[in-house]
Image (cartoon, rainbow, N blue to C red; front, side):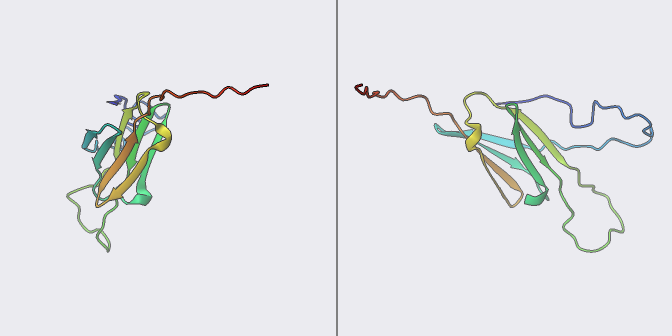
Length: 132
């Protein structure tokens, strides 16, 4: 599995009539750890402030995409801000060794755990021949 180097969403799209003073939306690249076992790859991504409802994990054309939008956890109306929460975005290119139909995800305490099972090699077997 390799990280796919592509521009973040909207970075290459020039919008007609857009004001030059407005900045495009910024994305943070969440740090990840990837572990390998004989059965699977396990990807751990730090996504602080992201709830399950604001997280999207998808596979499309052999590309695993992680996208999350953190929400402020404090109640009340914002009066002053020095720290801005930015959305997370990261993509990985999956190889043929990953069984994409069996990928599982879990989000707990701001850490996304993805289980990427490896494709099991074909096992030798005897094929029964029936008589006609």
